[in-house]
Length: 168
Image (cartoon, rainbow, N blue to C red; front, side, top):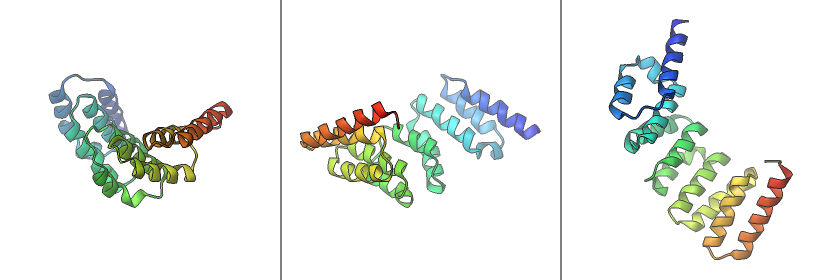
């Protein structure tokens, strides 16, 4: 019961938006190690680090989690890191390449780094697993960048159709 209360208190503290990186990091270091290994607290901590533009510190936390298990919350944070290189992302996420969310993330990273053909491959594989609005939108943008305007328009049409169906 005490550990649950402690976990709750630290969760609430981390949910507060601090403007001071030193305070955040000092609070984190003062927490018991068992709590610093809690995935929910790690997520809140990494989120705060990103908001404070402490990208390297955030990347360390995020990558450590993704090395051990796939957690889509951390995958979303990983995509917020400004300096992700496609090769690093592929290496980190290779063991999860049968997950649609990972393929879509790799497609977004490839798109962001202007590796449009790779982005297309990842996005098409992700859409083949599960069609999503985000996948259609990304594929439309990729196809436009590749100069395949008709394909881009076809994906935009599919996006509009899926959106109006409300099925995604």
